[in-house]
Amino acid sequence: MNKLKLVLQDKILRKRILFTLSALVIFRILASIPVPGVDGSRLAQFFASNEFFGLLNIFSGGGLSQLSIVMLGVGPYITGSIIMQLSTIMFPKLKEMYQEEGQAGRRKFAQYGRILTIPLALIQGFSFIKILQSQQVLGELSYFTLGVDLIIITAGSILLMWIGELISEYGVGNGLSLIIFAGIVASLPATVSQLIFAFDPAQLPLYIVAFVASILVIIGVVIITEAERPIPVTYAKQVRGNRVYGGTSTYLPLRINQAGVIPIIFALSILLFPQMILRFLQNSSYTFLSSISRTLLDVLANQWFYAIAYFFLVFVFTYFYTAVTFDPDQISTNLQKNGAFIPGVRPGHSTSEHISRILTRLTLVGAIFLGFIAVLPLIMSGVTGITAISIGGTALLIVVSVVIDLIKKIDAQVSIREY
Image (cartoon, rainbow, N blue to C red; front, side, top):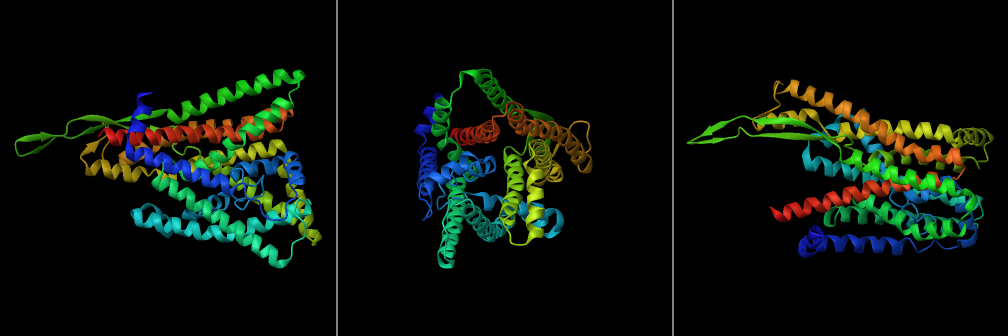
């Protein structure tokens, strides 16, 4: 309560929170404006019977279920960011730009990601329209109408990307994560009412198991997100004039999960994007393309294969994102420049190796746990046969991680105010 009082009293922080809320309200208004020519009843029926598009709807921030002008959500931008991050492995110049050129390099790197969003949004928008036409959710469109719809959908995705970046800069928390979070939270009333109306007393044990699992997921995510390994650091004594500086001991905190919710979002994007392209290609007039697409879709539709692929991608992306965002060499150099050292470890390369070794072991624990939490709802869905659990589990994981990150950002703002 004291912290809440401090937040409300701080004029700057209050403005940031109001800006974030206003931006999310604008997003929800945009998400309720549908693309022309949509059959609402067919659309609702289509989403109720399709788990794949249910996951895509989460990823779009809830805009897809309304077939709104922001139906793609921030998906194309996230996909573009993933492609750019992966490119740093293949192209040393991009890696140098991202890691060594400072803020200017990161800005240029982010700009390339934004430019890449446009063609990705056009491809995804065109695929969606054709898939929905094949399901008779959308009627036949002329070339002009199709072109206008594609421009509107792409512009909506770019607009959401801009709103997300404005939230990150002028609001509180990560803007893109908050947009996905807002879409999930906005769908809660409808989901809860649906569960109440469809309640079957015979399935009560399954509901109890699902509820207990949800609580355990929340506890697990919070524990792993908060857990850290402190590395002791000592500052050498320095004499300047008649004064002695340094000589103090502190620690360098290494989190078990440095990457947060990003590996989950990356893994979902990688899993869903190829499926969307394959669903578009399965209606191709070329028999060869159509048969290959159907075969691959059948493989991806297998619940256990999907769970294994999901776990593997979350595991890999946890390591990958940690490696991109946390550089042991840079930490070692900074410690050496400030006259600090880890007791029992030589400064320079030895310190970098020591930090890297600890980080690798910590990330292993975090990656396995995060992967397990990600696939747990899918396993439960396979055992119980309730497909909604798998969607709900992914949404729960994102919501918990985003809320933790948001609380930390607010804590940081309160700490700055106190200083």
